[in-house]
Image (cartoon, rainbow, N blue to C red):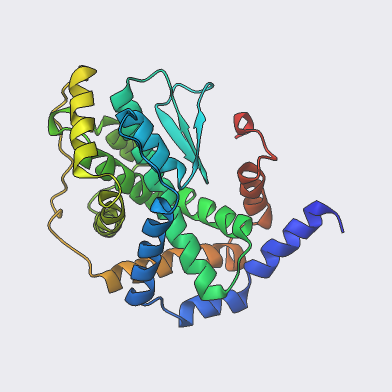
Length: 286
C-alpha cells in the first residue's frame, strides 16, 4: 500500500459514523476538561529553564518553545502566523511586539491542544497528525470558529499588552473580511471569552508577574505607538458555565464530522492539512 493510500485509510478510519456517535453520546466532563488544562500547564513547565540574564523576549521564546517550534517568517509581511505545532514570527519587529505576537500564536497552539486531547481521550485514538489535521480544518474552515479562535488569541494578547498600546484593528478588519455580525454570532464570542480565561489561567502560572512587568517596560523602551483601544461587545458581561462551554466544543467537533460524512467535505481536504503539518507541502503553496 502506498503512503498516500495509507494516510487516506487512516483518515477514513477516524472520520466515520461510529466515532461521530461516540462523540455525540460521550459528553466530556468538567473534571476531565480541567485535568487536560492542568496537563497542558504541566507540560509547559516540565523542561522549562529560565535564566536571570535572559532577556524578556528570550524568556517568552523559551516558554512558547515548550509547546511549539518557533520559526522565523521570512516570506510574509505579517507580524506572525500559526501552523499547527509551529509559530512563525517576524524577527524584524521590536522585542515588545515579538513578545506579544509569540503569545498570540502560542494561544492558537494551546487552544488546538485542548481539542486534540479531548478527541484523543474520547475516541482513544492517538495518531497525532490525523487529529491535528482535523482540528486545523475545524478551527479555520468555519467562519464562526475562525473568528472565535482569533478572538481568543487577540484578547489574551491584549492582556499582556499595556492598555494604552492595545491594538485590535487587525481583529476588527478580520471581522469585516469574514462579514461577521457580532450580535448574530454572540454565542461564539461569549464562548471565546470563557476559553480565553481557561488558557489565561495556564499562562498566568508560567508568565509570572515579574515577566509581565518586564513586558510593560519593553513597550516603553521600544516606544510603541499608543492606540488606546478596547475590545468590548454589548454582551461582554454575559458568561457561559464550563458545562456550556464544553457543549459548544462538542458541537464544533460534531459539525465537522457531519460535514465530512453527510455534507460536501472530502478526505482530500484533511490530507492537504496533513501535508502542511508534516512539511510535505510547502507553505508558499497554501
